[in-house]
Amino acid sequence: MAALGWLTPRRRSATARSVLAGEAAAEAARKSSLEADSAAAAEPEEPEFPVVGDERAAAFFDLDNTVMQGAALFHFGRGLYKRKFFERRELTRFAWQQAWFRLAGVEDPEHMQDARDSALSIVKGHRVSELMSIGEEIYDEYMADRIWPGTRALAQAHLDAGQRVWLVTAAPVETATIIARRLGLTGALGTVAESVDGVYTGRLVGEPLHGPAKAEAVRALAAAEGLDLARCAAYSDSHNDIPMLSLVGHPYAINPDTKLRKHARARDWRLRDYRTGRKAAKVGIPAAAGVGALAGGTAAAVALHRRRR
Image (cartoon, rainbow, N blue to C red):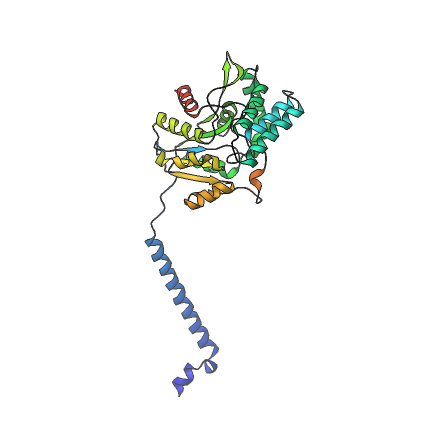
């Protein structure tokens, strides 16, 4: 009966119950820790990324709403308007064209041609050097504070690993080059407007650096630079850049639109969202396909490669 009394909780002393509880808790904790260690050992470690010293790897970043909040081209347009390059009605028309393209999500050839022509007419007759100088000022006025810190950190991680990092954007190549240089990146692939003797003619070189053209630009640059695309990374917010993202071994959806988010989840791509607010992707007016100055993808990549040589 004495043993039976010891087993009965009601008759057990507080000290005995405390000792029993403590021992049980310690044993459970030890068992849990061992199981966790075993599970961790069983799981393969995720390989380091980006890989330090991998010279055949590089990173390609879309610009609008990926690296920068809003559209670089729209911010550039604001700066030109401030400097009396065009009238308010032209700014309103220009902004509406960009908004329509983003919200409609389709590439109507007639609408895109109208958008390109209106923007090209603004720079026609101006010197390239003039707009480059103004672009430096506009970056400080409208763009510097709109760089997403999270995306900037991703780009820096590639740079710290010794890899090259390019912007790939439908924005004018002059604007893209300024932004890339200010961020310490390797360079930029952007849209190109024709110039003769340093003066814009108002005509295009090639086709818009948008959608499939971006993929062709990246492919051409990778070939020229001896990169292995399977070891490269690409980052974008837009489903229009799925061709570029699909080229590389490490695609990332950054601040993704609905279509890209769905596509990325279906393919187990990594996602990062640095916005605050459910619809923050619509902050600013994104650049339409190559308004202002547009270039063929392969031509842009090869031209940049030649200049770097």
